[in-house]
Image (cartoon, rainbow, N blue to C red; front, top):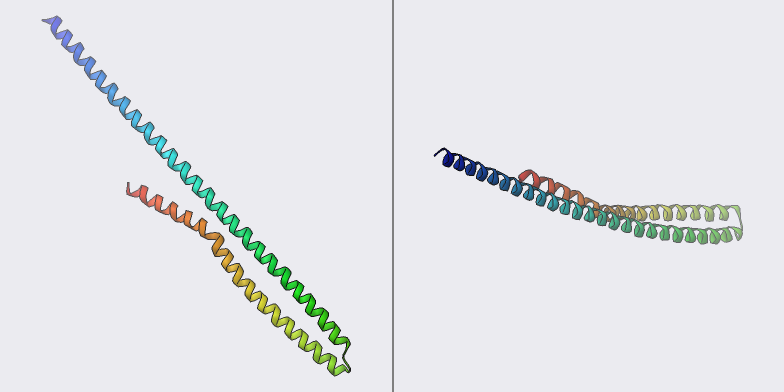
Length: 152
């Protein structure tokens, strides 16, 4: 009888050990799977962040090209206007005529400059919005991810 009891005790201990080992192995496997899934999510999220930064950089580059082209065009037009005004000033027949032409040129130059600055300001505002849009979307995604993880 003692042998039977010892055998049963051994068998019971062996089964308990196997159950604990199986449960531990299952828990380790589940945690490894969760870790791999989390790393995949982090990798995908990082890729989306990089794509957003690249889109932002492309928008900034395009905007800077636009600003540069506008600046060159304005400078060229201003130079042409200056040359025309200089020629007109040389044909002045009196000091009064010269002052009137100079005043008209100064007024038109200032108005053109203010108009160009206003227009350029609108371009820069649009450029800023366009450049920041992909980055703002990623910040929103981070906020949603945080809210989702808090809810878990």
